[in-house]
Amino acid sequence: MTDLDGTWTDESDWSGFDGDGSEDGEEGVAVPQPTLAVVGRPNVGKSTLVNRIIGRREAVVQDVPGVTRDRIAYDALWNGRKFTVVDTGGWEPDATGLQAAVAAQAELAMEAADVILLVVDATVGATTTEEAVAKILRRSKRPVLLVANKVDDERLMAETASLWSLGLGEPWPVSGLHGRGSGDLLDEILRALPESPRDDFNPVAGPRRVALVGKPNVGKSSLLNRLTGENRSVVDSVAGTTVDPVDTLVELDDETWRFVDTAGLRKRVNFASGAEYYASLRTKAAIDSAEVAIVLLDASEPISEQDLRVLTMAVESGKGIVLAMNKWDLVDEDRRKEMVRELERGLVRVPWAETVNISALTGRAVRKLAPALRTALASWDTRVPTGRLNSWLTDLIAATPPPVRGGKQPKVLFATQAATRPPTFVLFTSGFLEAGYRRFIERKLREEFGFTGSPVRISVRVREKRGATGKPGKPTKR
Image 1 (cartoon, rainbow, N blue to C red):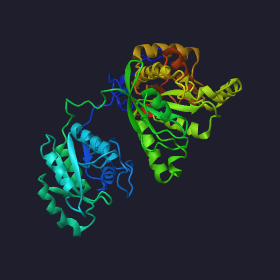
Image 2 (image 1 turned 90 degrees about the vertical axis):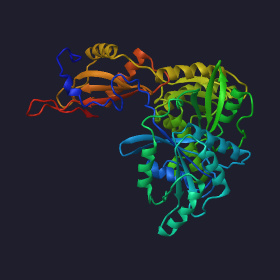
Image 3 (image 1 turned 180 degrees about the horizontal axis):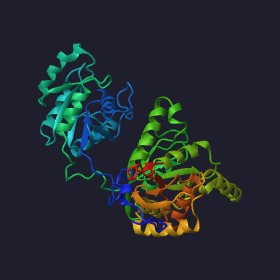
Image 4 (image 1 turned 180 degrees about the vertical axis):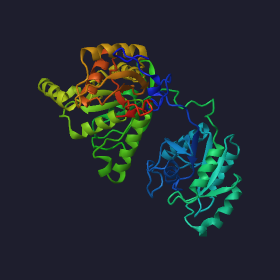
């Protein structure tokens, strides 16, 4: 293989390259993983156990029943095997209202899972709810593991024997809080999980997922109601009416989308408390599970630190972004001139995001959101062929070579797109590339290939000097 400057490069130099998680030829789409659904009645410690299984504190835990209301998926790794854990809301067979919706989410998780984990509070024992759940699960075609949670010491071990009466096999005594027995449970989970998910379930199929994000009272719920034509979300002039993300199917421009209305973020997650803390976590989870985010800004007010914090969260998530300037019906000529200056200063991080001026109240231009969303998603999925990429990069570097560093000018030897969603490029070099030059390459990439509405990531791999044997070292990531 030849370098971009025409000299010969040994391909073995790059034998250790892992493509930032993607092999050559892959399209950057995550490989499907088997799924474990964690179900049970409210407050038996499902989310605590989920945190123990995934090895980190992501699921929201509070000593109040009903904190978890939606199905939330997390990636888990144990003994070299990856799988997906789905945390669910408490399951009640005779639930009504909100609890009925929570129960429906749990039932959907059970249908979609490869293995079901039924969690029972060992300090309480089997209730009529568990007996009703067990009756359903015994008819299920999925493997079911019965977990006796909150077994924090030996005194409760004897209590778990009574759970054999549920007819789901041996109960596994664990303590989600302290980790007692969790290793044995994880080994059993791996034995029950198939190597690959069922063919009849595709977790990425269906409408494209759109997260509506913004500071409190910016008009997210009003926009969702305008798009659906009904009062799907509660709207009030009091900031912070929405706490939980609300999933809604929206027909927009002859296409069905899944919109998620999220809570407004007032503070950094680290400084939030109580319900606001949990709302912040759920909003972050909603962005992470979406494919594109509509960041709403109040066009009638100056761009605030809260706005920039929400925008930063969306950018760092790596998802497509559309900026929606809401309340445009309140903007006069003077405010428009001020806004131009504010956007130049405040949105310097996302000059590539498309901006749509809308009014959720009057319906002005809301139909323009669909084309902007499609553009962002198309950019997010774009892959540039390696040959075309390197041909373009050869001309770019010939015209504007990298700056000299330490008396030497680094060479860009080869480039490849390692992943999509978002587009991720890797440059193999003979030396470190300055951050300014990487930003220059990103800017030129956008001019040539588009990527409107999508972040672009550039990684540099520096080839180590050849050792005494004459063999090349392994590339290092910078």
